[in-house]
Amino acid sequence: MGKDVIVALDVESREKAMAFLDSFTVEKPFVKVGMELYFSQGPAIVRELKERGHKVFLDLKLHDIPNTVKRSMACLSGLDIDMVNLHAAGTKAMMEAAMEGLTRPDGTRPLLIAVTQLTSTSQERMEADLLIEKPLDQVVMHYAKCAAEAGLDGVVCSPLEAGKVHGACGAAFLTVTPGVRFADGDVGDQVRVTTPARAKELGSDYIVVGRPILQAADPVAAYRRCVAEFVG
Ligand code: C5P
Image 1 (tube, rainbow, N blue to C red):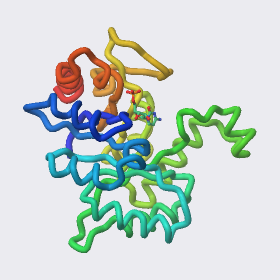
Image 2: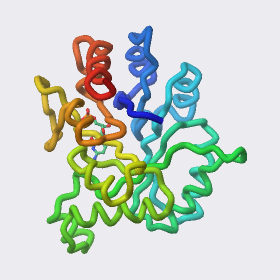
Image 3: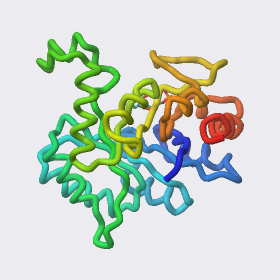
Image 4: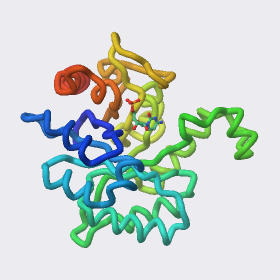
């Protein structure tokens, strides 16, 4: 898969998701379904999106014992999703089990991406709550390397970290990067942001974009602007 823009379908109902997608008459955006939409709508929402011709990144961030993650990933893989993720903190054994569970009988599987440390976790909280005393960026890179060693396809990270991740884990190891804003747009609650064009320069493989598209006066135009800047 080449570079692409993934639209975060951060809405609470099927109706809102479909109304938004109905405005796209030419493109079929790659979409991200998160916990909110999946837990309220169940697997039916994924089936509907796939039937409509969208690629789906299922952002459920699995984290459990290896056997449970393996079996759960097998269920998700059966939904014909294109990308799914887990927490690297579940250990390499969990990530390897996830890869096994995801692999379909015909040998194909969705891309498997790891979350390293959540961007909501500060150095201070990581030390106090998790008893991890190394610098946060070192922890993130270590988790990325563990994910690569377990055979995963990539990590979720900031576009600002994409180069470092590629340096440590290889150019083919994917960087899926949120925190993207237009140069003239609202930052919202994101702290470290980059434009789609800058994310491309920094080597991101996929940008995940929510509010700059969902809340735009013309979402289709905003999506096209992202694609033009990021994919070219
Ligand atoms: O609206 P916005 O463009 O900020 O949406 C970004 C999406 O990426 C949201 O679905 C958010 O949960 C997700 N995300 C993030 N930062 C991370 C991981 C995921 O913003 N570190």
